[in-house]
Image (cartoon, rainbow, N blue to C red):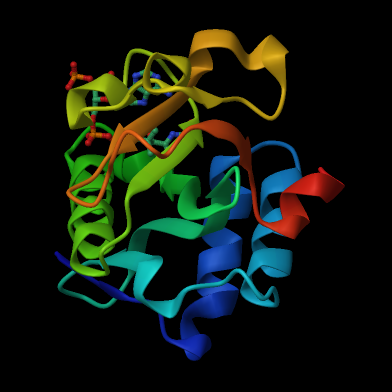
Length: 166
Ligand SMILES: CC(C)(COP(=O)(O)OP(=O)(O)OC[C@H]1O[C@@H](n2cnc3c(N)ncnc32)[C@H](O)[C@@H]1OP(=O)(O)O)[C@@H](O)C(=O)NCCC(=O)NCCS
């Protein structure tokens, strides 16, 4: 398996993967809108591809903001059900974090499981002074400070525009 950047030709397979992973259609719709959005960042749209050329997993981070400071929002992420719990998601997460560091990004925020994401260093975002777009998300809204993080990065997190249509 390799982790590589998404090509435009991969998109139908990626959307089908997200539809297979998530029972509700909102994530696939969100992803289509993210592909078309100004906040799309090609270096942070990553697929996990098998030796045989099948896309097993996918992750995207898009432009967001902490206050006025550019930051990243991660999601959706998904791994085909038959390939879950075999390390594909972890490989995608690590590649995503490495790519974000390579781009000099300061922080990645996400909404997700408090049992899964802390293993990659994610913390409750409010412990870093980064506040959730929706206070009801509580500790499920997490953030990972990257090499470019500094204590001046504080405030409310804003996702890419398509997240407002959820
Ligand atoms: C979440 C997901 C991307 C993880 O990918 P993966 O390839 O299965 O993950 P890995 O094999 O790298 O890691 C497996 C570990 O994560 C745990 N894990 C996987 N999904 C989890 C979840 N939703 N909540 C909590 N823990 C989870 C597994 O129990 C396992 O734990 P262990 O290492 O202690 O045994 C994948 O399971 C998935 O697509 N799930 C459905 C969609 C989803 O929930 N997306 C995330 C929305 S926040």
